[in-house]
Length: 87
Image 1 (cartoon, helix red, strand yellow):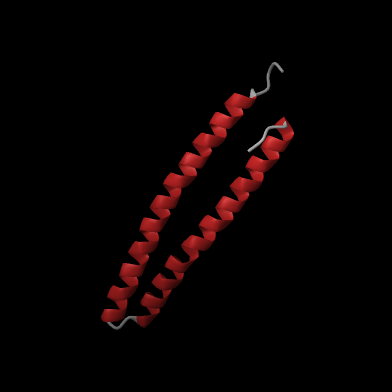
Image 2: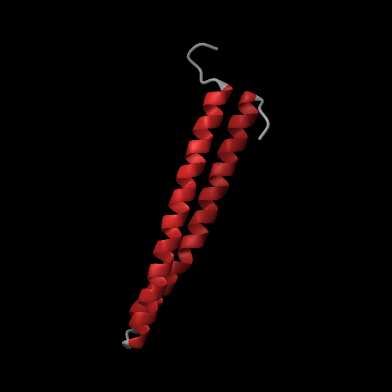
């Protein structure tokens, strides 16, 4: 199996990728909260268009995270299947 990653290396790499995804999730959640706060501020100042834009931006964040999670899970499943490993 020379030149190919060993199963334990693949598992560690996937764990690091999951950790990075979790860090990204935290940052994305903070950004969504910031957009919500901006929406409130804009609405209080009568700028409904800007408030709506901020609300839409905040609402997209969970959807993007869900898509990223699904892609990661599919990739992880494919890697495990290719290496004949269990999750």
